[in-house]
Amino acid sequence: MPLIRRTLDLDRFVVARDTTDGALVGVAGSFDLTLTVPGGAQLRAPGVTWVSVAPSHRRLGVLRNMLGELHARYRADGAAVAILTASEGTIYERFGYGPTTFVDEVTIARRTARLRAPLAGPLRTRAVTGEQAREAIEGLHRRWHAATPGSVSVEQFWELFHADPEWVRWGGSARRYLLHPDGYATYRVDEKDRAQLEHFAALTDDAAADLWQAVLGLDVFDEVTADLPIDHPLREMLVDPRSLRVTARQDRLWLKFLDLPAALEARAYDHDGDVVLSVDGAAYRLTVIDGAARCRATDEAPSVRLTGATLAGLYLGAVTPSTMARAGRVDGDYALLEIFTTARQPELGTTF
Ligand SMILES: CC(C)(COP(=O)(O)OP(=O)(O)OC[C@H]1O[C@@H](n2cnc3c(N)ncnc32)[C@H](O)[C@@H]1OP(=O)(O)O)[C@@H](O)C(=O)NCCC(=O)NCCS
Image 1 (cartoon, protein in one colour):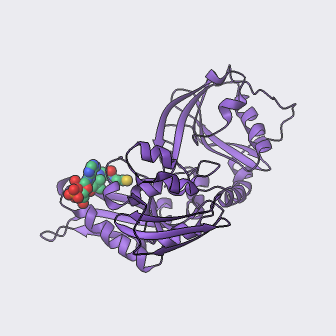
Image 2 (image 1 turned 180 degrees about the vertical axis):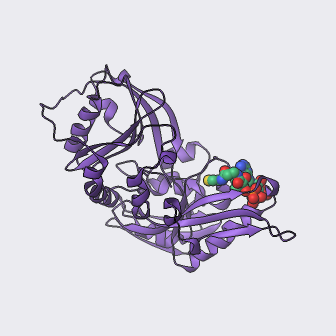
Image 3 (image 1 turned 135 degrees about the vertical axis):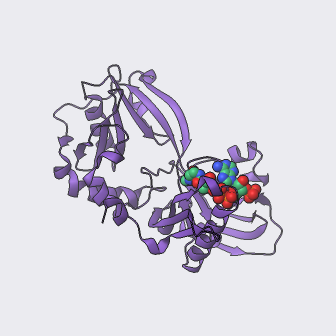
């Protein structure tokens, strides 16, 4: 069985056929993932994937039908949220999804980028082979996933990850590995001869500094590219802040609430509060005491109205309530939503 096939559980997939000739015209399914939320709880989260409709059958409701069936299954299965990464920004909001993590795409001028507090060598980071990195990376990713809101489990992808076949490289070199006891970075050399960071996961600030110094020490490359969470401290770690250039900001993970009370109760909150929310027209009372939430459907009058897609932006702390209010996406007293703010940005750290 091909490697890619072994990542898929076909029971989680639906297909669409043309009723006149039986032609296969659509496919959609999901990976069975976990999503870490603020406070560290891990929600089971179907990760919708492989969405495709034949060009001959677009805009006829095929996707709508397939997603309707999949969402009904996820609800029956007790999932509180569904997640995905989107090929286009205009497809999924109509189905209740909103962006819930973002990245900055950055280019680092490696020859001028110097840490303000360089570590005395030798570093603890080691350049190792994929074979040497194998076990350690799996363990480190599990720890990192547990500690990082917005991240998902990658268990079913390890075999493919380690095999690193040509077709997953998008024109880049085979994967290279930098390993630290509390973190790792992997990269490829891209077609423009830049070091393209693929994963950067550090469990401590010391590990991050050690790994960054190793990355900045990759002497043969003029530039390093990376996707970093938008509050990443690398710019502030550098002597010359201009040696890091943000080239784009992109949405990464999108989220839809399937069981809103369960999802809101699963995360922890830094502030207590009490608010009656209207989400897509349904009212809920959310009460947070000592950081723990209780959420119930209610017929009380809401003080704040917003859509589920907008709430997805607030749920993991990616967007602040005041930004959403200034964008015209919160009706009512947005300050009551400040309980959703988090100290750190969520981070997906992979793709699926
Ligand atoms: C995106 C794609 C799956 C849509 O499938 P589809 O069967 O044509 O979608 P539907 O007919 O069910 O559309 C449902 C609604 O979404 C809208 N929509 C669908 N694709 C859209 C797009 N790319 N941009 C904006 N709106 C889109 C439709 O206009 C329709 O709107 P309505 O509810 O107001 O009528 C299909 O175009 C496709 O396979 N594209 C290439 C692969 C891809 O991008 N997959 C997504 C991977 S994340």
